[in-house]
Each structure stands twice: as C-alpha cells, then as structure tokens.
Image 1 (tube, one colour):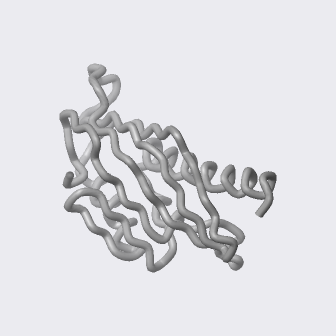
Image 2 (cartoon, rainbow, N blue to C red):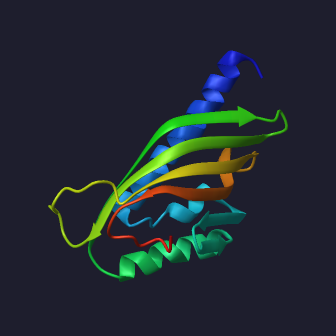
Image 3 (tube, helix red, strand yellow):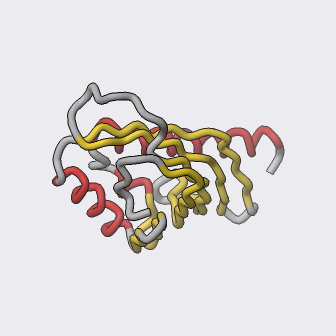
Length: 148
C-alpha cells in the first residue's frame, strides 16, 4: 500500500468513526450495529459485548433509560494496514455525557479513553467493518455509564 492508498483507507476508517459517533450522539445509536461486523466484540471496562446484535442492543437499552446528552469526540486517529484487507486503528475518545435534557452544566470530560480497533474490509458491503473495539479508560469524570 503506497502513501496515497494509505491516506485514502485511513480517511475511510475515520469517516466511518465520525458517522458512528454522530449516530450515537444525535440518533441514540439506532444504526450503531451497522458499523460492526456480525462477529464483532466491543469491550470497555467491565462491559463486554459479543456480536453485532449485542452491540446494537446496548444502544437500544441506553435509549430506553431516558434523556441523556452525549458528545463523543475523538483525536489522534492513526491506522495501520496489513495488506490482506485488515487494519488496526488507534485513537483517543473524549466523552462528555450526563442524564437529562440539554443544555446541561459544562464539566470536565466524563472520560478519556484510549481506543484500539481492528477492521476488515467487507467486499460485499464495500466498506470497512469493525471486528473489535477496546476502550481503556485513562481518566474518569462524573456520570459514568459504560460499566467502567
């Protein structure tokens, strides 16, 4: 993979991440499962979800709890590719979240986590699918939800 191909593939992965968090923050994650492969694993602290359906059900559960404001930001996105349709991405998540309706008082981030994701390119769907996401908390604030 040359530099230009790597840049394009990295942009595709990062665009998928932006679309994912946009859906979570503005649409309750109603389409979150589509970001993942059917066999995907999502791990964050004590939360361990196995399979696309389990991941999607987490977001349905979250919506059922009632009003919540969340802003998931990410930074330092970096991806490496194995040449066989696989990739590993690393980035940092900054989360501000609290139960209730906007506007809420501003606080420090609810959490800052290091993320490691693995992907495979799915020819049938014509896009990258996440096969594993692991979030490791580096800093914790108030209003924790995700079983950290």
